[in-house]
Image 1 (cartoon, rainbow, N blue to C red):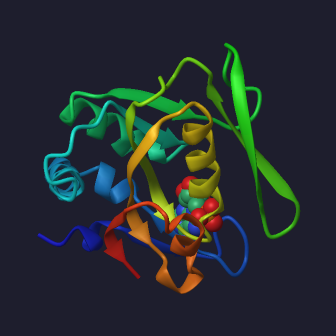
Image 2: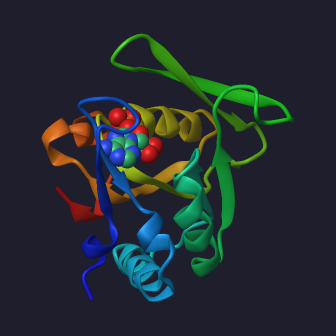
Length: 170
Ligand code: AMP
């Protein structure tokens, strides 16, 4: 089975010029989902993980599955004004302007071994902001992993001080 066969390309979504990688066919198939999860878990080679941090919102799907599989806690990183408790925030640049991500201050303890997960590594802005949040709380980033990496956007340059793994590369 090839998990890339379960990713659907949608041209021009959410706006013109973007080739959107739709993972709903993958999520819709339990065998493809399990295969993808095992590829991500195997890439860690048995390393201990205390917390899996998933980026809103498509990083939540496999983020929670990974946390369960690794016996780790799950931490949601969310867009502004979604989290109810005390937060820290990190901003990152978009094509036009900036965006901000937030995380609860008690989500990670100093020295926690952290896996960061998102569906797509594109320009790397999101992943970099998530790394900043984890490091602000003293977490140790073991790996940043993704279902897909769009290599032509060079996102890994923004987070290249950490190990990076992607199940599919384009
Ligand atoms: P970036 O910050 O540029 O690395 O973008 C990563 C975030 O944007 C991820 O959370 C993805 O869900 C989303 N994203 C970026 N490009 C795409 C794409 N071509 N298809 C689907 N999602 C994308």
